[in-house]
Image (cartoon, rainbow, N blue to C red; front, side, top):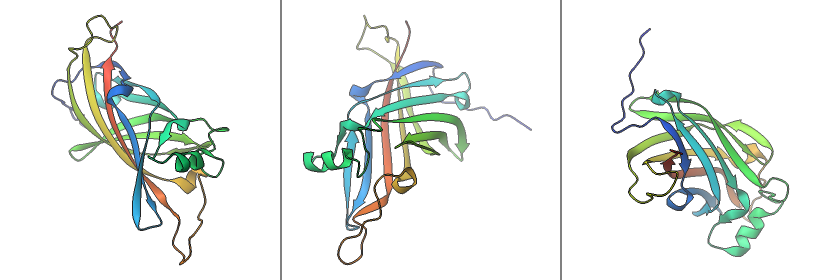
Length: 192
């Protein structure tokens, strides 16, 4: 058996904090089966540990579900309610990686998502956007470098007990079962 060498230009091994100001946690779901609604979560945190071998890297993240924003306050309140996310009982969603693997020329981040009291495996397609110097914060303990990642995936909300299969007149689902996830992450190297 041979070990494949994974090379990423500019790669830096270390511990990184997700920068919420320069990152985004977004999703898309079908509405009335004729269009898509997009939303995002505004409050989240996480840590990326890039290993000496990129395939030994790990990620942990936590999202404040009350920070949902779909562009409509009334809809956001409904999604926060016990009908969907039930943020009074389940205020956070967490992700913990269990491995990184090659998939052709791409990477897959395997991990476990915990939502609404249920934990299930959720693989994410991972793109390494790059590594570079951090020119902005000379006095900050995070000074050193920044890294960028994009991760995409899909979850079935019903598998996590979020919402139901309610239909509208004509028989179409009011809300799609599948939720597309898009994570645009910028992380700051911890140096102190």
